[in-house]
Length: 261
Picture 1 (tube, rainbow, N blue to C red):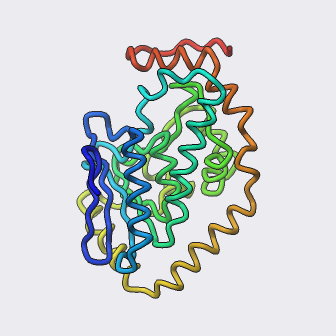
Picture 2: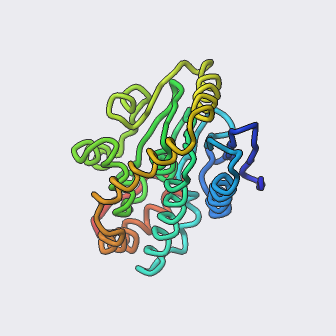
Picture 3: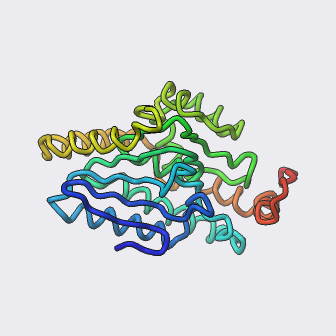
């Protein structure tokens, strides 16, 4: 169940998936995304597991997005849509787990990491948590329609625009104020609060919890547009010269130069 960059463990009614790639701030490879899907499927299939926790191996990061090296050979509209479709599948699996999910966030949760945290039911954060999707200043790509809808569900359209236009990161307390974080606690209390919250949930009626979670999910999905509503925008961004140049700049550790082409 565990891989070289993930650790899956079960302690009583609580399962935890730990992202263990600290040298890259837990940037997600496809193997790590696959491990997340496997963990979700395992939790879903085991009636003894009542809660799933996602966390980084240390407080340096939750997840710093997708490993950018995986974009170096992305050139065509088909490849762009295949990436977003695959990511949407992973996030959809996480969102549909009938057991409650908790993102334990300290350090950065950016890009795909922010999306993963958004798909969890609760985001319990330490003081160094940072959230954002800074692609306007890093890569020049964009969110899928589904992930834009998830972010808008939490923080509203005006704040989505602020976050995406500026590329800034929200600190823990601003994330709490706008509805992205569920709770912020002192760093030395974070593990205790996450553990206690999981235990409290696990002790409650599982059918009530599952029904509440699924009811909320259905209502959110009903308000969203079609999953492919933004495909033309995705392909425009991912096949642009700006995106290709920005990926190269990121790998070379130099700032991108934007041309709008």
